[in-house]
Length: 159
Image 1 (cartoon, helix red, strand yellow):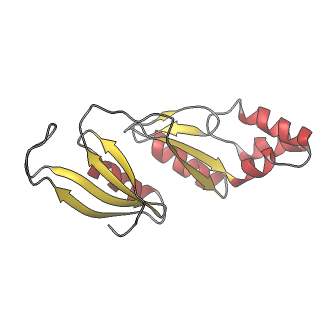
Image 2 (spheres, one colour):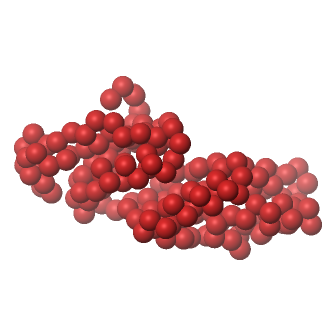
Image 3 (tube, helix red, strand yellow):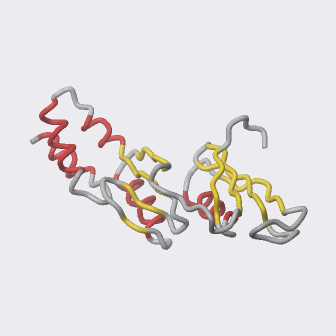
């Protein structure tokens, strides 16, 4: 692995499956080297997949098959800035439709428990609008959504 800083994500034996899903779902993503354990460890045997190197949207990651001891939480998430409703819908449905679950305000979880913020750039612009009343309307609209609806955000922003 060439990167000096890599995100290490803990999985319960499914690191390769997760890496492959991310590589198939997100642009600028790929699965790299898979490393097998040279010896037995608490949640695996010699020869089991221990780690997998992968890239998610240009971010280097390492999937560690560390067992069930640690779970993912909302305290860590990937935020994906989308350019339009089609991209927002595609990514949201890929995550939720593959065993994940919906949440609020553009958040969802994949089937491995990792949190994703599928955030249209239009939403970011709307809640940062210098017209604070417009920003508040857009923010209040977002607070009622699961997957972000760009047309509804823009309508709320306009008043």
